[in-house]
Length: 113
Length: 113
Image 1 (cartoon, rainbow over the protein chains, first blue to last red):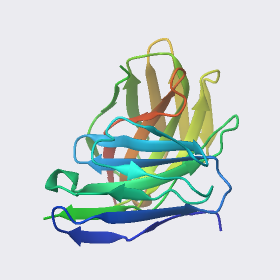
Image 2: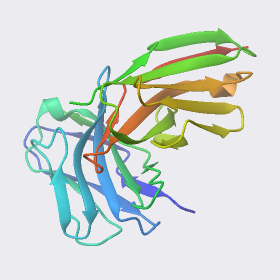
Image 3: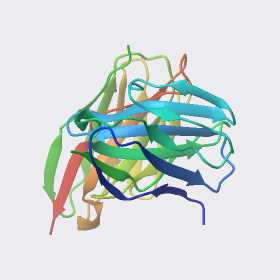
């Protein structure tokens, strides 16, 4: 089954404790992206990647890092989480063809205390 | 800067009604527009994707239209059912920034029996 898998589903942590949210897709997609969703603000893009070793900033990259060492994986790293990073995070992927339909993971609800 | 607005923010209708959700965007230089559905606690599911050269797309009881010149898209849901209750989001992919999707904040739809 074609899917984007995120882990963990829920995460509670404390300020400053490094964490990684994993994302994996099985559709051989070139494009992968991370979003955060906050009430009233919709989804905002954090980082995206067009292919292995090719990443770039989205609209709200501060406080986040990503890497793309393999085509299927695109982890999101918070080196020193802060309470304003409490949010619902989504990973997404798509091909880069004519109709690049975006597929989303189920989300990671992060709370930083 | 591209901005995407969805009106209304919330909508409650009785089962069987036909309804229209609206999405407007400020910059008409878009590559495509996509409508998503989001169920509580879940990720986004792609409903329809309209390329900039297209005027509409249909899938079952759903019909999405695009008017680039006026910066508007509508999602028409025919004969609504309680199972249609969800949040509906639109997102535009800008021509100049292919890699970025700009999302609206969504319309929360409740269809009651």
